[in-house]
Length: 240
Image (cartoon, rainbow, N blue to C red):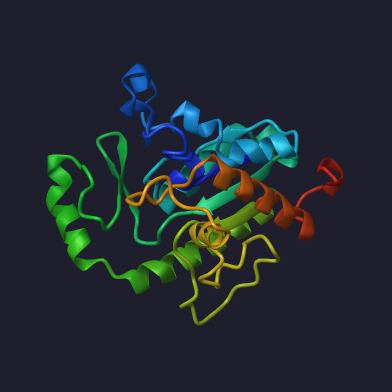
């Protein structure tokens, strides 16, 4: 099981208040990877246990969709010999986020206006925040994710997509995802909305993130979706 996404998939704050491992002084060497304590209770880890699969998480808090696609492609390139037995579950981030390469690093930026970027990128970031066009960002994300879906199909990689917070309900044209995308055009069918509808609260009123029980719920939700839509070899999945 390969998963990718942003903080929802990295299980930020689930049991430990940190989003990045490096925020914990004892784990600084792990950089922006998910905090191990949070990853252990993440929906991805719990789903892997449900289907008895090896687990790999490429998610990073504050990630853009550009990062999600780039790192997924990198993993595919490095693991080409195991793709026939891989299931990918990918959670998409908010549409406006971007990834800016600069001096050998990738910087993730969003429209919050509080991202840390190098001095040389600060004017560009201010301009980005001031002029972001949400409708155009949604249209671009819609096209790019569709192209990515087709790319995975050509490689015969089993995959499931879902939305974290954003959705495509404003899109005039709908693509046929053949069940590989959980209701992308329904504003109610996002990770955050479904968890709140199911009665889960975020870890604190100022947070966007959920605790272990919500992650457990989502792991089972994804499993049932996979089974109902016959998206993987069902003989490998539990029957109950």
